[in-house]
Image (cartoon, protein in one colour):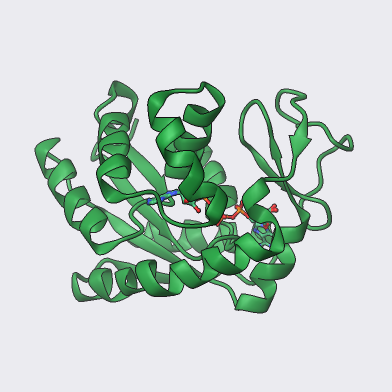
Length: 220
Ligand code: ADP
Ligand code: AMP
């Protein structure tokens, strides 16, 4: 565990590679990846009340309301394994969520270390969506062309079945990108104004993005 807790946000549109990079960075830094999307999908799989409330929004490509999302992430960040820091992937996605995150971290006696903004052109995002596959048991994400599993249809980590997310179908992806532009892209300015934003070019091979991120994190 690092001596000073390191809390980083991976900010970027759907398909920009936040989850892929957060998983790698998590291993590098030894702090957990906290993905709000994964937390929702776990709740849906386990048929919890929260999962039942969130499902319709997710299936439409809309954001789950802040009052549901913020409590879920706050609870996750209060768990002991996040005491040394966390990599936030997919949260915050609205200005109220960002403001609440400041408060949550301050209540934990911590603060945000930095925000990695992963930029990828929209046409590339749409191409990535059609090839993404997810492990049904651990949530790890693959790509049929750019990041294929060793054995077709099976997760390298736990041999779970790979499936295509319903919200990765083209119409829902378009809605998710529109929602990103409207509700999430203002966060860049929010964090730029606070001196926390660092830009990373996400339109390169996965290894190169990871190397750029490692360099940026070293300079924080
Ligand atoms: P996000 O968490 O931002 O939605 P993911 O990490 O799930 O994005 O990546 C979206 C898709 O693109 C996945 O199929 C992933 O394997 C693939 N991918 C991630 N990074 C890259 C990259 N740099 N180049 C090509 N494909 C990538
Ligand atoms: P992701 O796995 O990050 O692509 O998220 C999948 C879906 O979960 C999103 O399209 C939203 O419906 C929902 N979601 C994830 N994170 C958030 C968030 N921070 N705020 C609101 N909805 C979210």
